[in-house]
Length: 144
Image (cartoon, rainbow, N blue to C red):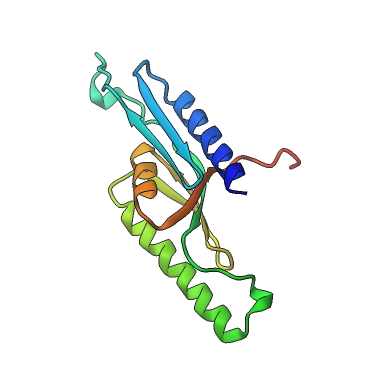
């Protein structure tokens, strides 16, 4: 499972890098629990800053680093505590992304996940946060 997550994370990284290919040399690395994008050299442009298009956001699903068990294995009190822990860590991650370009696409109540659309700076913060077990590209379901 960890190898599959690493492969998916690498695919997401390659997709993100291809979408943002502006001629700069980029170094990319991936591991089962994180994806890191580092630009080796900044690029310059002759266009005024006000006319530059913002980089597109990348859709990802973040699996949060929080203990979790399927709800059928829990009593009502444990379910409430688990859901509160999920909501708390989701909010911690959202608060950490302040100052970056991101959108909350979906908060999940039952599973420790969060669907986000993020820019490169947000992705870097997510990977450095210690709050995330995995971040994978959120791709549309081809079946519908």
